Amino acid sequence: MAATMRKFSRLAATARTASSFSTAATVTTTRRHLILQTASYNSKNIPHSYTPQSHWLSSITTGHNSVISYSTATSAARHVDEKYVPNDVVLYQYQACPFCNKVKAFLEYYDIPYKIVEVNPMNKKEIKWSDYKKVPILKVDGEEMVNSSDIIDKMFQRLHPDSVSVDDETQKWLEWVDNHLVHVLSPNIYRSPSEALESFDYITTHGNFSFMDRVVAKYGGAAAMYFVSKKLKKRHNITDERKALYDAAETWVDALKGRQYLGGSEPNLGDLAVFGVLRPIRDLKSGKDMFENTRIGEWFTRMENQMKPNRGTNLPGA
Image (cartoon, rainbow, N blue to C red; front, side, top):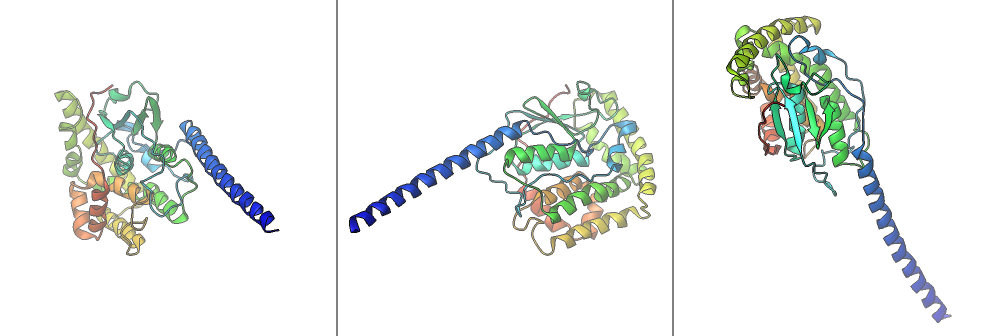
């Protein structure tokens, strides 16, 4: 009898060992299958983009009701078991575009090296090769991706192929960024002719433009955006631009509820979206006023410290 019991014990141990190997193999196979699936992932195009000149701000005023697939983890989970590393990433952008900066914040947080092509906002010749005439456009190993939230969705899925839907709190603030915060920015950035010109100073130092292109882009763009911002102010019932900006900043700080980040101890996708959208105004008069008159500075500095520097270079226009 004792010999029989010992035999059953050995068989049970063998079965448990075999089961563990089988489970591990299944998990590995499933993970690889998910990675292959996400290589052809194609989510809905969400209009989170900038378009030049006459179409420049039209995309900012669109609604954003799509639920985006992200991780339910509290943080953005920067470290993953099998990291997706693209070989060649090129961002077609405007330096001052909030949607472009939202994509850049994601790339820099996840330490994904990328190159930049600065697009001339007046003639957009740098993206003449594309049927899509807005920015951002991200080319990843030759694949064209458009719309900021769609780009982030695809890239996040490739980094986290086993992720599921975003938690309700993060989803709420992602929608707040696209449906409210971006609409507050333009009336502040282009509040006066001098502030509008200040926002286009980057044209003189970014991009491979001719002297005449720089002049036309700076003064023509600033004039156009000054008048567009007045229409946006009226459309979104903004009476006091600065107060609306300060209120938005304070609303975000209140949302943190004393946490370092919305994600807790590490930023999540809500943090990255708010930071990315606000970053282009950091050194403008509107941004300086915001930091002086609200509590957002400490959180913003923490987010800056989370970013990895862009290891790419500025490229000539395609």
